[in-house]
Length: 480
Image 1 (cartoon, rainbow, N blue to C red):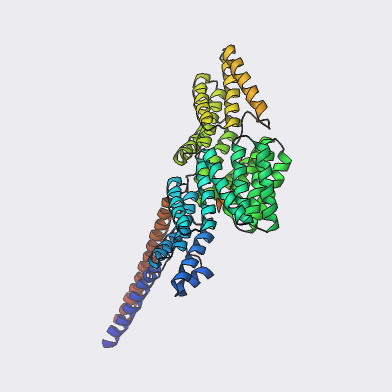
Image 2: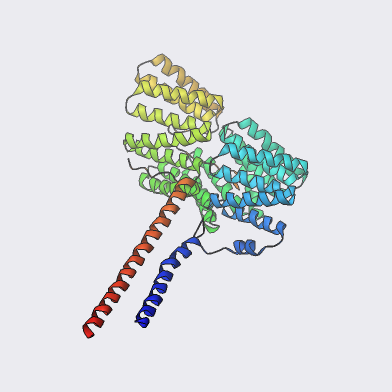
């Protein structure tokens, strides 16, 4: 009898161990990822010197910002905490800047601007010219997205002056790209292409692949806007090859989106949609609101061409909502114009006029000449359909006069062709947009599923042990 109790006691201990072990394992699950620890994470774990620990955290933040912004934000905030405790203002400046960059990547422009300005104050305090220049560039990107173009040009030129004084060629190239983007938005395409090519020469010489890829995207966009499809695709494919080789999903998404745009122009809708869907998937994983909004609009335009107006509107309004959250006036004006075109194609001309006029007001407020011209042409066509030929003629003249001041001929439906910026260090069944909260929910759900599965297995195993015990007891009773 004592032996039986002993056996039962041992079995119970084994069973307890089997049940507890999975929960001990779950407690060890990392909060962000199940991946193997990286070399930098290992260095961080064994680092004793506080300055070294901060440097590693900053490198980790930079390394993960293109693939896991949430993790990048955690590393940058930890770096800031340690730097503040250590009284190291140069490292505080870098950490504040890196936090701002991550917020930019996830589309929180207000927070990005706040952290950039905090970093800029510290950078001036310690006379850190390198970071002052970089921060002016980053602030310029924020102003650019908000369509404050001349404000953006001002800070970009301040950055350029600092980098020229210091003979910082990489900084000079970064400013060249950003200035080129603004000139592109203002319709000054010759200036834009000139700045892009100057930047490309510097980046190619220094073998900077991220930046070289960005330049190819920008040059491709200029060619695309001028209607040179073959040249545009060639530049985007160079950008895509480079971005893929260095695992930069942010630039891969831009390249894929823009290749889709060129394929759309030659009516290859099937392949265009495939490229857009690939771009959208990457952008959802990166929480890239600006990119998501752009690609959603492009997908909507394909549905418009297929006369699937309900799906087109669903995508357009999702895109518009994101652009409004970003306060991206240029994108808002474009998307509202697309919605107007969609209504006009359904012969709802009165409603279309309201959207065209709303888009025109925004485009004029930000001096977006190409978008103004597009609205003039759309208004002319719409008034013509309404047989108001006087107004149709009036807007046609406005369109022709403005078109002559531009260096390219724009198509009526101008699908989203994207630029990038060098300091991007630093876009009827709709797939839900991924947000950090969604990712957290998914991880929580996976944990619950794992726990339930383990509990089920433990219960089955326990039932099996009890069955064996009962069988053994019955056999003993039979034997006695």
